[in-house]
Length: 316
Image (cartoon, rainbow, N blue to C red; front, side, top):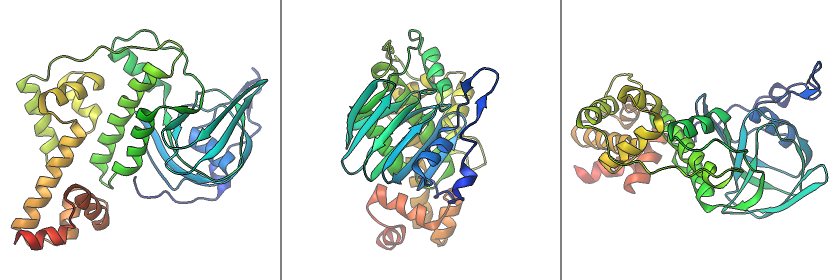
């Protein structure tokens, strides 16, 4: 993920737990990261966010015996390691599940329940704005959005795998990471619409790719060495398409998602610089937009199996 966030004093992450809309009696919804910090009594190990795609956070926390108050966004979570009992109680309703690999837990926006978890939990959470679900429904011409279902340790290896990739793929490169998070949010939204709402939505497959002109413009933007915005939102807007349709049409045309295409492009640039110049590796990392030499080296090794310095020596 992105660089770990600063561990602020817990009080700085909290709002008044007794806050209410006094005139209506309706509980005020908190941001998911704020509410999670309150009930988990810690800060996330890492968190990455942007307004259109919500946030992805990785937490490790101990036992939990508290009421999770209503939150502004839907919370979808999965568990990288370990096995732990989960109990969610709302009124007279009790749901019991097990936190383990391949399952998901969903807390719909605005819901509240008491949670009892007896021990340590390793969890990755997505804070998904309701507007993101509404946008995908609108762009895909899908049926009306049904209510998101509560899930407690519910088997869904697809959503679980996508959330796990969020912890593995973010590379310390702002452009690549933003593009990945936006793609991930849209893919997750389509899966959630199909499997975890009261009215499952079947999204029609996208047929056909981008026109030659639109594809050329998209590739020019992705290849730009300037400060051009290469987010999925910008690419889709430039093409005159929705994010939902652009991403699928781009993959139809190139065989790669926009994120995978840009990652390969950056790798090609890195290889050219390492082979053809004497630029220090830290300079190569900076020119390609990586936050640090270590982040660049880790990303390079993940794709090639070698460190940049080992690869350079072998190619010369």
